[in-house]
Length: 413
Image 1 (cartoon, helix red, strand yellow):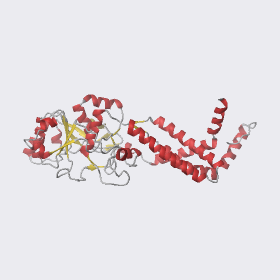
Image 2 (cartoon, one colour):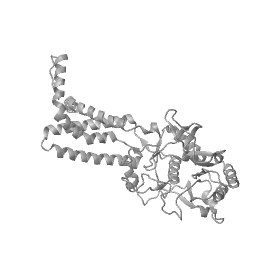
Image 3 (cartoon, helix red, strand yellow):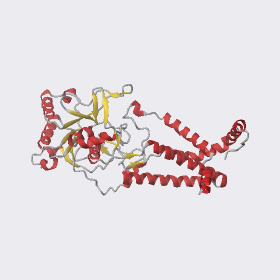
Image 4 (cartoon, one colour):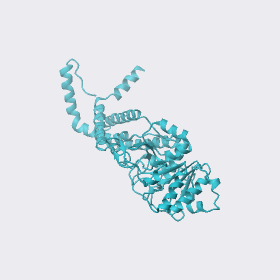
């Protein structure tokens, strides 16, 4: 057994490979420094890289014939209603006694004073109504947002609000949302969180206990929620009591003319079948909020491995590959290139399946980005080291050993 560990130590502990790994991760670290930490400048502009392996799980590996139904959330397609029509919808919904109503419609300016007064009184008379807002500019010095925008101040008085900003730019994939932020007016919640709190405060307390500044959205689908048109809602014969009672209702734009395929207010999500390049946006904003609410209510969160564990795995993974590439270089020099590239390809495939299985079956997200980059660059860095740096490093090592440890002349392994 002692001989085995001695051989294992001799095979794994290689100064040349250690040096290559250190230089490799220093290079990766420089690349990370070049990429700005955009969350510091603006937490809602986090779109430098718009592709992840888990996108394939959402868009390709899930069974599209099996709809994950959520009967706790009902969507009302308001289209682009005038304010009189909006008053009628709100009154009808309030009569049906839902648990909470979220209105993803912006009232940015005042119009007819009489109609606006009736609309404000109607909204104020619905205590479980949450209005969608947009966070203002982010101040990196105070780490706070300016006043929420999206509504005329007249309509905000006495009403609950929640911001609809996502952690992405407008043309990037929406994977995450920030549950809680701070504005100059005080703490403010995301639109979906504020609605979920009205319906199930305990579920939001569990979200708060996670303590994550951002959460990844566990999408269940585009067709997972009942949809009701605004015209049907206003129909006196419509059986709204059995559909809306004790449900969470989200009002918003989901296309015109019986769910026509409009890209207005549509965003990119990991469910997009074209997960690379630029396809058409695939999900309306109000449907994304519905997916977030379903995740909060059911507690089906996505979990990330601890950063320290991921870092250790990446370093070990890269180091073992560097040792292996060095060994192949010494023993199979003629076939070094095809052997190394084949091994890299096999490892890429295995890493993809490991990531996909962990995410699909256990909702664990393993992001070995630096490890994968290290695997891709290991071959080139070993070649650079062997061609340019190995002999100078050996000479430097011998000088140091001769000067400080003259009785133990050794060479690098």
